[in-house]
Length: 385
Image 1 (tube, rainbow, N blue to C red):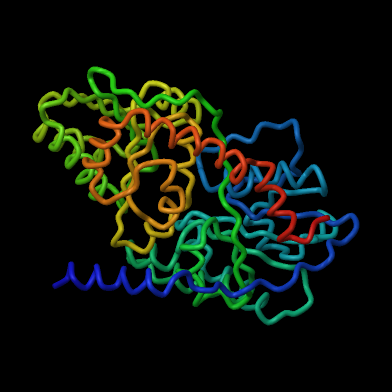
Image 2 (cartoon, rainbow, N blue to C red):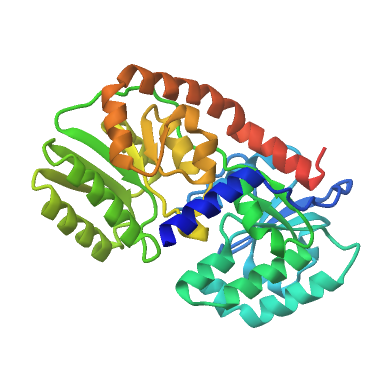
């Protein structure tokens, strides 16, 4: 019965089609000499320039702040502002005249640590009219995350952001999930790509080389273990080499995955690589296919951005990915479905078609997800000429 209800719910959503998102207010004319502030989990505030290298392991900061900020800094001054500086003086007057303030993604522990002062600040901002335009960049559904980790304040913080800020989200699916909290509207700006375009290859090696990359933690470890074990079991007669590029701090989860893989496929070699942008690009070059499972049952997973699928396409590899909404948008350029083992069998049986999909995807990605295109979208939303 549960499965039937799930299928019925998905069918009903498909028949309804995409829901209209609450529109953001018209962008105000950007003040002459004004600056953009990205409030981020940084130790000290700093003005953005075109020569400094900004290195961080936090994907949301790179994709949602660093890359857009460098593009915006070609037009107006841009500051990375620490949470402490913003809390002390929300007007940011010591930096000049603020034209727009974007509250970036803050780590859940930081939100919980500052919940009293953040609640007061957002309540005050929600009651004001005519002040500096506020935006909240929302790469995740914090309410769904709070439910998963049993931290109810994350939902209250999200409601507070929505009462005082226009939400900026990387995809429509996430916007639909946040619409009930978005009193000041929602703008969609995708994640830009950040890796180099590589030649397309969709042929199998011996052993077959598979890749998964991403953040591994409590919230997705069980799902990932089950998904990878399912593929390994289905290919028990094929020698496999699975590489996982992730934080080495997730040692317990990695050991559990390795143990499960050995149990279902004695000839499956697991290689773990410490995450970095360079390591991810090198792993893409080594692999034959990329696996991107997501938990379709969880709200926090269904609203994920296009980023990892875009990275695989840009890296010249056919991705086998779960059918969350953003991946379905790119279904012409990968294999998208619930049975990842079936998708891998299709790719192995249709190498020319798989390669053609990826090549077409690279052209699409270059047009839609380039840093230049994303920078223009941020400028339009913030009212920057």
